[in-house]
Length: 208
Image (cartoon, rainbow, N blue to C red; front, side):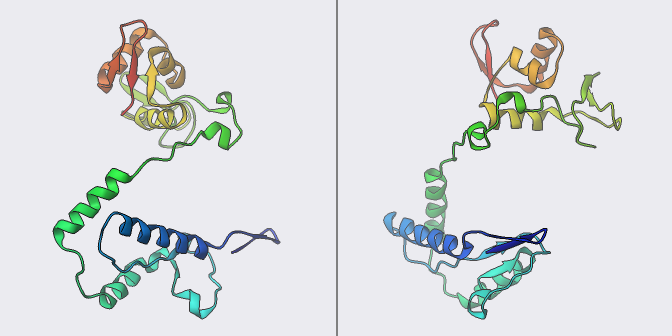
């Protein structure tokens, strides 16, 4: 796969090799968990509509723009008409996939070679994207575009969770959301209704 940017060509690993490996892993997983053999089809889907796809005719059927997904699914429905899995087996397969799924635990600071001091703190304005919006009278107000939002903090706390983990203290909340006082932060936690542990001074809350 080749990307041309500013007159420079750069090569990337073939996505076709990746999907064949993933297809093989899925087929082996199904077999190892005693599910019936079913047809597995793999495709490379390009999300950007401006991407130009150049490939041999034999491979073009496996590479498509995202807008072509509904058409491709229609073709597959016509190709595979026989029902191979009963509803109970489908339900069991779905449940097993969910049970065996594990989230990838990535240290983002190590991966991107950044420190915690590089992170912009505060609630980002959902209107213009500027930092930080200020909490006044139950709303987050942006000093740049004057946009106001009631729940803009929810996304910020979600981002905190992915960066630092799902535990957050009163002091950490104040620092990350730019809340001025401990009392204000305590009242803020009461509106979030997070599960917590510990007594008042060393209490930590769990971001769901």
